[in-house]
Image (cartoon, rainbow, N blue to C red; front, side, top):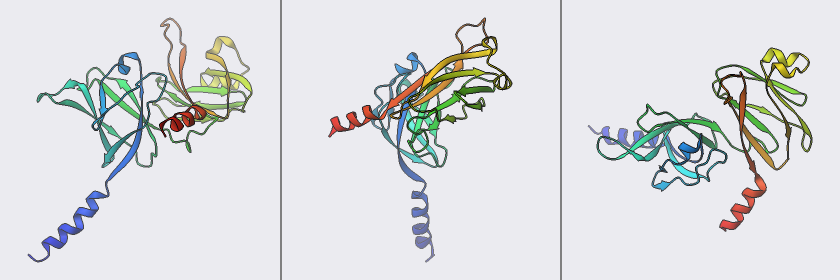
Length: 231
């Protein structure tokens, strides 16, 4: 009997260690998702866009999960539907990509990737592959295989130099460039003040085995100007 209060005092501090506060940013997958009405805690999420991140929103992460509210969807009790977002341990600055999922209660599926500046460095480009096939990517002389299932792969192109950007089957990158074997070709110019997230998506022409790129760039000079304006 005398030990019960003591045990409770031990348990409560341990439970509180599982909760933490993180800054989240959000990226809408497409225009339809960008029109959704969502909230992080009691704050409405503004500025959802397919080609730019939102500002930071502080959320409480408990046991590896935080909750986003779909204000435009109601549950059986008439309350906003909760969208649980799992944060992988070790992620410092989560970027939540909001994907459409019509068969879910919220109509959304969250995909979380690391977006901290120490991970996605200025001047670099991070590729994530949303297709179901392994792809080879070459930027200038740097070539890597980018697996499917959204696993990020980073490139560090030469700053202030315009180089070729080629995407093909991995085995094709080992051969001399042949336009007929490429899924995608373009040029890339890296800048020391800019970092980019490049999402590989299936091409819009069903007759072709092509892919497309959705590039979300961020300029730290613009971020600095925004922070200065808020002071």
